[in-house]
Image (tube, rainbow, N blue to C red; front, side, top):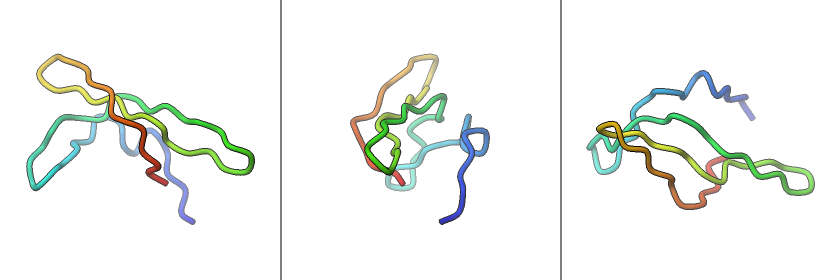
Amino acid sequence: MPMLYLSQILNKPIFYKSRSIGKVIDLAITEKKEFAFVSKVLIKKANKTYSSLRYNLL
């Protein structure tokens, strides 16, 4: 599995149905036994910060 670095996705736009919904400003990682996964994504749009729901993005 290719490695993904936080620096590669910070400040990158997030798209939903071909529309930009904001930029990634931070991630939360949850550790489970053998694997860690992204549990939250902080998104910034128009100087407001939003927290995503829990997703397994890996």
